[in-house]
Length: 251
Image 1 (cartoon, rainbow, N blue to C red):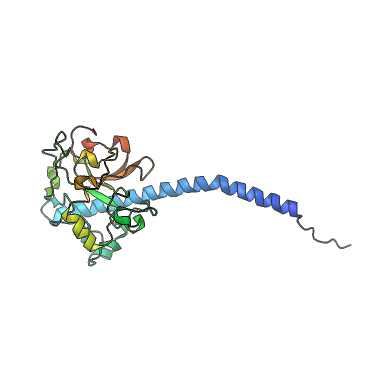
Image 2: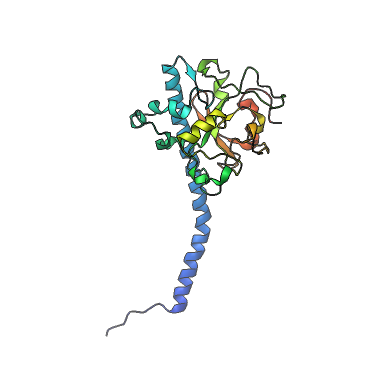
């Protein structure tokens, strides 16, 4: 005797669909967390590679490294020949994958309504004068945009060289080499003041307030490259001036 195939009833199908939807609702937040963790690891690796290039650059340039992104030496361009054969002869810094943090916001806009998704500079560099940090001055810091000898950096394993760049409606979005040159003239991609550290609330457009180290790019802080070449995460409240100029703390 032949038996026909038993079909699912509509109620059974709805139950299965409901179970799948419930599982997806449970899994999606977990998958999101895993993805963000992967982004953090990828970003740390980017910074390590930049650190290797920074040390190779110093080796070939009398131990000097860029201390700001200005018209003298732009680290984005200076380090490209030291990032491997793939980038040795290229001129467009936008082609360098390790210069991009995958966790940089893809939504929202920056200064002038430019899309954050178009930002090409995802990291800011330390331009703080470590000899005269000037924490109590009106600018709460002092800039040094001349290259420094790597060996002159005190306790270089505890000093940040580069960190995640913040995004916000007040923050310039660098689209190309022309924008990079303009930002370099006004030193808009450097950090040299307590007003530019993660816990600062000063985001007014103008002078030294149009930049900041990212506050919550990864978890509740950001990734950092240190002068000795290692990269590590710091929570926003821990990322104070003592890691940038070796003095004081955020005020």
